[in-house]
Image 1 (cartoon, helix red, strand yellow):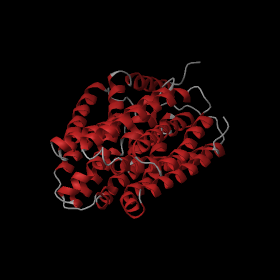
Image 2 (cartoon, one colour; image 1 turned 90 degrees about the horizontal axis):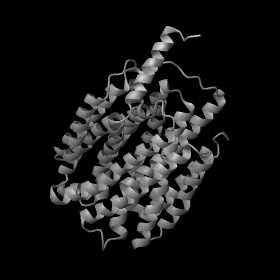
Image 3 (cartoon, one colour; image 1 turned 135 degrees about the horizontal axis):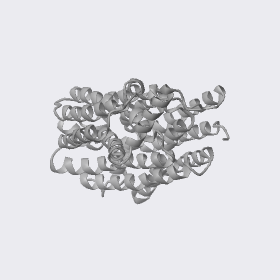
Image 4 (cartoon, helix red, strand yellow; image 1 turned 120 degrees about the vertical axis):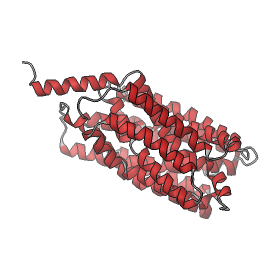
Length: 402
């Protein structure tokens, strides 16, 4: 029996939407992930240079001014996800590209710490769009979502590596303002390319044909609880490490990392190598029981952070590489859980809800980073990260067996 006309139309619309997310569109969605993380971490890499220009003696005292960016990065995910499902993911991605580029220019024009805080907060609002909108747009209809998520994660983390490398070079040769202007121009150029390459959606995701997920509500509730706890712990660890690694290496490899370009190159090496873990994990997600794989990767974070707390020199650098491999390796699981348990019609909203909680809480990491390190040192911070990883591992044990 043929499907009802409405369902047939919705299914056709979904097919066209999925078909369009290949080639140039998929490439631009992955580049968008790189730009998103790059823009959020330019400040962390350039903070010493910015503090010097603004007359602030210690970089730790300037870090709290970026808290607004990460708060908006979290709470902005909720309206972004809702608009992605009900208005359209293509339209929201255009807002992302152009808004992020414009806000980067605004940051480059600031003349005081409070102006900087406001401009970074605006940037955080636009950067919030990508994760609840871009990733669901990329994986809808994917036969092997783990692989797609892994490649997308690699792209995002290469953006982190590029932030360290590009910012270090630009700060040295053109000043910290150029470190915001250059990626801002890239974001706007990608927005123009995306507008030309991505066809208009015939219907927003919420209007497409449903796909029934036959799971008890209690199981779904448990999965969502695990999702919130693990993504919150993961986001805290991610923010503490990616925002603090530069100063950690500067302190414990002081004889090597005094030059900002050298420091940027060393950070970029850590992030580039660690990013490969996401591709490997993405492929394993499609083949290995998700619970066991997730638990193993999160559990490995605990001893690595504990060892790094007492390491210096090249031993610290090796441990930083090791713990970033498992930090990045844990990232694909939250998106894989959403793909596995949530219908595409509402994935942006579910992703937005979990990101609002996770990133909203983890914004505390950016606010606390400077004061924590100033008062207690990096050894205390790394011990705290080991404890957070232990909480995440305990939560993963509550996932269903299948």
